[in-house]
Image (cartoon, rainbow, N blue to C red; front, side, top):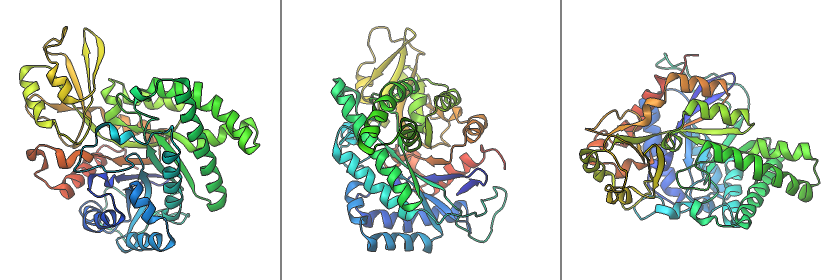
Length: 420
């Protein structure tokens, strides 16, 4: 939904909460879930979607017939697409994902080709340009109008899994693939008039996991090396090359991931902006946090699952300590220096409305009205609720069902957005 008219800002939820790798699965999710959620949250309004299109689905979508069918489905339900989650390339539900979610990484042509294909498809799915009214948060009903979306975003892996990047050649390969993707997106803009931008999504234990690492990568690797590559491959000037990179490569700011680093989220947004890094999208999500006690350890065991990687960040003797997965962290609770009361933050996306479950709380308390005010002041266009872990949550946290749970997350966010 459009939450601000001038400058434009849109809110959606990510369809990666619904299982399915094939195009038919995603189209079924749109009809059976997204349309239902729209009616629960904003009946009578145009309703934005954050698509999740795996590589297999994108290959199916890569035809005029399939794109037409998708556009017809969206129009039928008064929905519009403005962002795609292009992070998971393959299977994402019901099987062991763990570190495989980062494959193929940005060293590979496969990741670039998949992302460029998504960009072409998103350019075809964006609503026509022009002006349209945004949703008024206090209204209950209004004639459905699909608002204009001036740009589309695609979120992607943060380069690679950190342990896989061993050499300067690894970094150079990532820069080259990202630069060539930016060149493709710049050409797509000229050809279609649709601006598509890519958001590298910092994640725990990945090549990019903190705001400082993102800034260092842009300033020390992507920009200097990418500018020279664009000048060689396209013949453009230094100024044009820098504009292409800054316009088409940015950051997907996942609030769960950066809260795991014990960062001040508002300060991180401002720091990225001050360094000229585009905030392509904000994924609104929350991590588990707790103070280490035997009771907390037992409560956390319910969140171990064989599907996803749940990295843990703790502070031991005032220093950050990382555990690769929740099961590893629980097995190491007797590690030297661990003291009762020290805070743990767990990469497990819990519903935004989750408040407390015994000793467990969440980082959603950092998503204050002031945080959203900062994001809108920085002209962030795209906001996406992302609680993809719904199907592996403990049963008590799934009692609402996925549709009503997502709808409740919308209400939670809307209550904290500044009034127009």
